[in-house]
Image 1 (cartoon, helix red, strand yellow):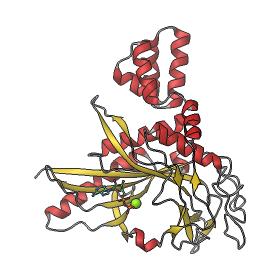
Image 2: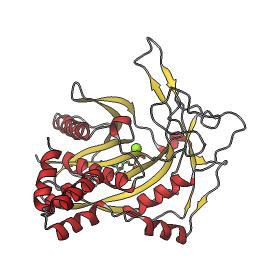
Image 3: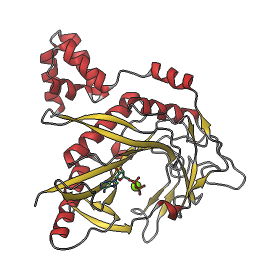
Image 4: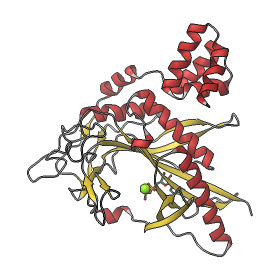
Length: 353
Ligand code: ADP
Ligand code: MG
């Protein structure tokens, strides 16, 4: 039997605003625990959130880069759940009216082919704090510095058909947010994290299979391995007469396996409702158009320019244009040496060292 893997990704990107999404506390990484959580982040009685305009500006920049519709009237909702690192007892997020609507991007694969991945939507929300287990024997530490850091959650349609396509999509998102300068994209610090929804179906079948969601993958390598191992687990399970259960799973990189974490919750469980402390945010066409004129050159435009101006192959131009630092470096080497093709080969060689 020939199986087809179906993948949809939910990507969380921390926005690099100076302050939090609803308070003036700093978002700088690495401070002493709990020194960057103010009364609003701690949900002290009587405090009220104030939206950070910069977070909206960044989200609109992202939406425009994804060829997406911009939500001109977006609404914050409360997603209620208990977690020790969520003192408010709810996460402020968006559900029905997100800031970024449907869009699409092209991903480029190693064999030179490309394909379109549709964006379902992207919404603004706040990050939670962190529970720390390692330094405390039999106890957990709670660090609320991260609480209230602005995030965009980017939800794709289930359009990817292999681990390689998922990685290519994620690299594309990484390239776009770093090029826009709206996130440092540092996966080791959790600035870009990914949940992978994975299902399998027989090739040719229309209906989607039951999916599982692998939480919090934070490196390109782990995402690729986790998707592969989870797809194989589902295939083995079905071929042995079993059924995939819709649930949340965790990837264990030491054992290269996924493990069940909890059964899947649905939107109803969270008792979402519009946050009474925050008014709907209305964005004008002029505001959107102003931001459009300020966008930097995006990786795909850069790629086309590299092909045309430097005579590079499509593959080389793509390799050199997706990451902002690499692209800038290549252009400097090309200008200094006057030998763009040699410069391309040399920079790509250095990349792989
Ligand atoms: P939830 O809000 O419960 O996480 P969504 O419907 O918003 O559910 O889907 C979340 C993600 O799962 C999206 O990226 C979507 O593309 C993906 N997805 C949905 N169904 C499937 C499926 N059967 N197989 C793989 N991915 C899926
Ligand atoms: Mg989900």
